[in-house]
Length: 98
Image (tube, rainbow, N blue to C red):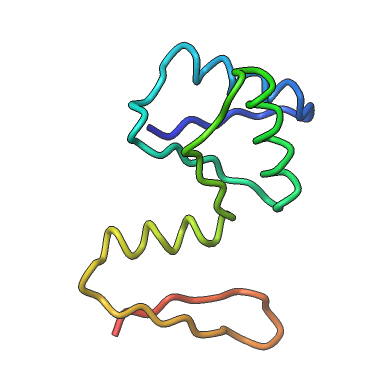
């Protein structure tokens, strides 16, 4: 399930995630995915959740780009994915299927 929550307060976001984990827990064998922007944020969030729950485990903290690539590979398993850069003036990246 994809759940998107917006806020400018990190503690409020982390507390809402902790409450969501308590109200709708996953099986212990199922990994939970939380997309983060940095390793520092992943570490802080892991410590926050451990403090809130007493223990934390089996949570993946991928970057947005790594998560998107994993989705592409899952949706298009047989396809070869190639990343090519667009115009040099634009920071855009295009994905080609070949």
